[in-house]
Image 1 (tube, rainbow, N blue to C red):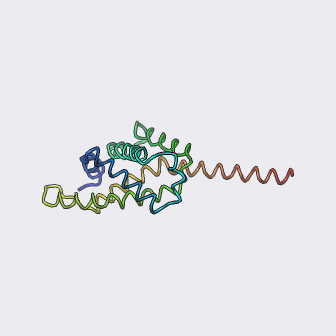
Image 2: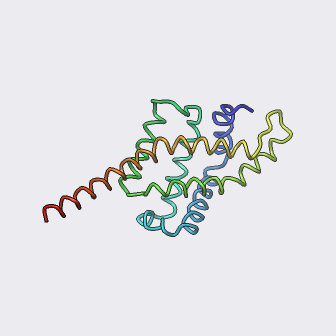
Image 3: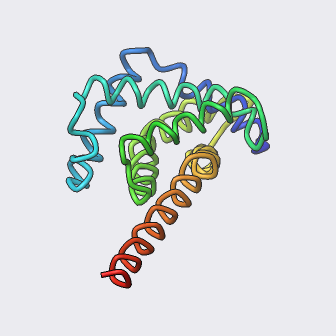
Length: 174
């Protein structure tokens, strides 16, 4: 299958064919796994409960996956939504290093779904492999990184430069 077909059609089917409860269960398992493996992230999520985290996560995945056909677009609701997500993450202080941890955990948690989909489509006219699905989700996550992570990284660097400037200024002016 062509990458566009996988990104644009198959990913929404794979994800949205899960029931709402199934997606929420996935969101809870995702955060449980993430926070168990990376306890240092607990501080960033301590202001909310598991249900709220799962709702946010599932809503974000629903949006990203349903808009997979807009990958690489320079305008539209998809881009604005990702920019808003980045602003939200900046406002609550989610560190940029967390994105690699989240992405790795997401792919790891999705792997059983990929393998199940591979088995279910094996004898159809459009079989798909778990590897193709993994690469498609990695492509989606790369898009998120370009719209959310890199602006956050720039912001973190600017804040650090400002801190360094004020420390230097304070030292020079005693």
